[in-house]
Image (cartoon, rainbow, N blue to C red; front, side):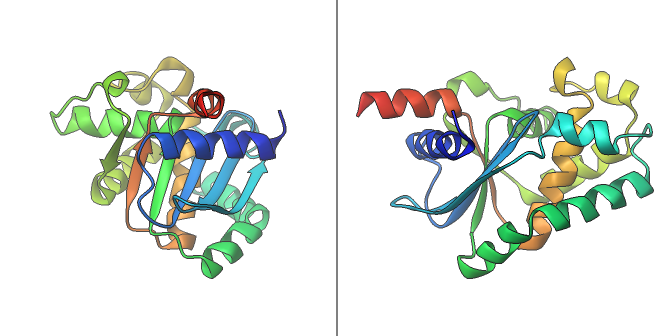
Length: 200
């Protein structure tokens, strides 16, 4: 399916999860691409798929362990250049909430919950809030950590041990340019969006 169709299915999924309360920016960070959907419960204002997935970013920018300041700066410059349209549209329709569709955001939620001694069962929930202060603390830890340290962290699956760092830098950048103060996880992703569309 095209990036546009993928974004629409993700919107349907997140809507079905009950996560959308106001104007929000949905983000789905995949390995190859990232989908952005600026929307509210009734409509999509803007959607776009970018070829800046975590695996792609890792190949280009993850050249040190832990991630060096130079690599992080180069990555942020690249994102700034690639995501100019995102920055511009978010000024036009300011989102109140960042909603992460499954993937990396499930890892964020799990790592934070385990650290706070409040374990969660993601397969039993549609969505949950992620405290911004908890996210920032976790983001700082993950960027400063080595591959070996992350591999031992509860809540991070083997596939995401390195890609999660790229997801964090991208999420940090989105939060900075949009000035969003609220983060949510929707456990419903693309697959659920397809099912939601079929159920209509």
